[in-house]
Length: 109
Image (tube, rainbow, N blue to C red; front, side, top):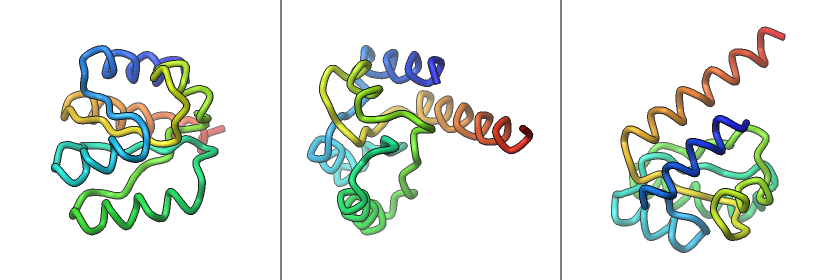
C-alpha cells in the first residue's frame, strides 16, 4: 500500500493526477484519463455514475485502489476524495502492474 501511495504522490507532484469527482469527470470527457481509481469507501452510487461516464467515453472501467480509503488518498492528494484519475501512460501502467501484483500476492496467501 505504501508503494502505491508513493507512486500516486509522484503522479500528483508531476501534475498528472486528477482528484475528486468533477476533475476526474472532466479528465475522462477530455480523453486524458488513463486510469481511474476508486477508494475502498467510495460511494456505490458515485461509482455507478463514474462507471457510466467511463463507458460513454469508451474508457476502461475504473479500478479499486487496493484497500486505500478516502482518508488514505487524502494524505497523498491533499483533499478528501473517493476517486482519482491518472493522466499519464507511464504512471497508469506502473499503478496497474502494482495492483495486479498485489492481487496475485493476496491470492497466493
